[in-house]
Image 1 (cartoon, rainbow, N blue to C red):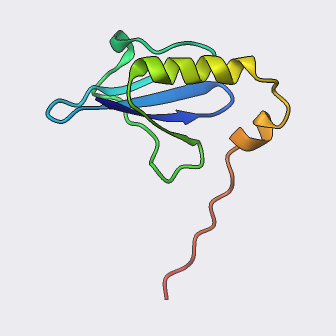
Image 2: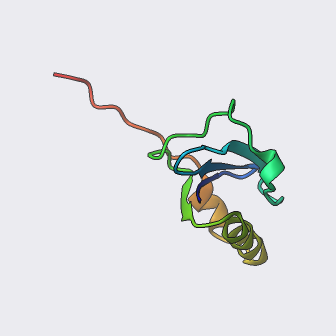
Length: 93
């Protein structure tokens, strides 16, 4: 089991992956915690190249522990880091 996490100022997305049965995606408030009941196969997560991508985690417990630690840190500079950066497309030649 593994989890990918995306964050912005208000929302957190987690995508659960498993070898033979994907868990789906869960979306919660960034101040909350994920539970297995939050995951839906019908939801879609942002792409891996999205600037809001926070990383991969081995378990849901690790995701929630990381979110708690992040909330405990002072918010200086964090808002700047979480803002979505503009994407510049290179036109095809």
